[in-house]
Every structure is written in C-alpha cells, then in structure tokens.
Image (cartoon, rainbow, N blue to C red; front, side, top):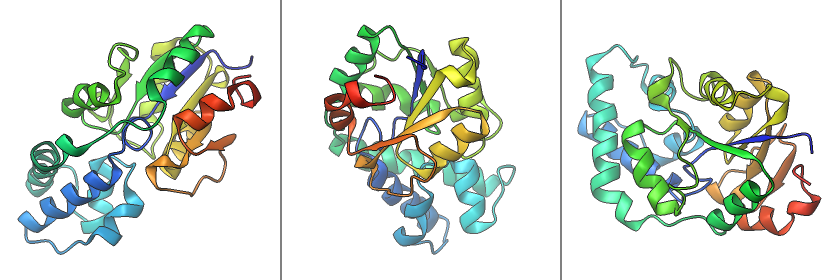
Length: 216
C-alpha cells in the first residue's frame, strides 16, 4: 500500500455541518450590516474565515470588523446550529478500519480550534482522532497548503505517503499544493472534485469499497 497516513477534514466530511456554517456566516454578516446571501457563501464553504471573508467582502484579517465577523460566526454556529448536527454515515467504522490497517490518522481542518472537539464528539470520533492541525495553528487556511503541510509534518511521513480526505475543492487544492493526494466525499454537498484520486458518496460508501480503493 502506497499510503501510510490519512488526514481528515471534519466539516462535511465527518459531520453534516456545511449548511449550518452557511447559515452562521450569513447571520454574522447581517449582524455587521453586510448583505451576503447563502448562495454567495455556499461555494466557499471549506475555506477558513481568513479566506472566505475577504473574498466576499474585501475585509482583511487585520481589520477589527473581521474579528467581529469571526466571533459572530462562531457564536451563531454554536448557539443556533450545533445541536442539530449529525455524523456522516459510517464515520467511526471507517476510522476503525483504517487504524486496523496500520494507518496513522490526523485531523487537518479549516475549522476553528474552539469548534474541533465539539465536532469530533458529534462525529463519534474524538478518541480516534486525538491529533489535529487547525486554522488556529497556521498562517493561512485552505485552499492554502499550510494546514495539510502541518499535518504531514506531524505524521512524520513524506507527502507522497499521505492521503487527504475532504469534501470540497479547497481540500483538493490545499493537498495538491502540499504534494498530497485526495479522496473526496460527496456527503458535504459539493461535487467539484477535479484532481481527486477517488470519489465516494460518504465514509460508509468508501468503507464498503475499501478493498478496491486507493487504500487497498
């Protein structure tokens, strides 16, 4: 087997949370008097706020308004959305199967560190994914390669022996820039997966085809 390590995105990949993030961002923008609708936000989900906010508004990370937007998004997400989130199908069984094959697993997510533990609890995977790199650990989030590069470094493996698992084109772009292949999952609601080495409907779908997948 070519791969010895696997990096997992969380939102959309392990937890059905992408639409919740869309709503939380729209509310945060509205709180600041900014008219941004769901159709504008949805294609950018998978980026960190440091990438999403400037693309939609021109407001940069060093602007005080950016800090208020970021805090507003987190507050709306935690207060209004988290209670309704569910794990994607087959998450825990897939992770256990990969560990049984001797693969080293790590989280590599654009999610804020403050949200990661809660999301992993929802996924039923906190004990299986204790290692993580988040947007809080790096200078720039996806689609920049920083998060993936940091995860590869923590795994202590060459990039060619690591596989990224995500649900947006930004996971693929970030991984490609870091020299890492990507398996894409459709369960996050995106289908822009050019460059992925394989595409599956969900963690369960990948598990069902594991012996015919890039991890065979």
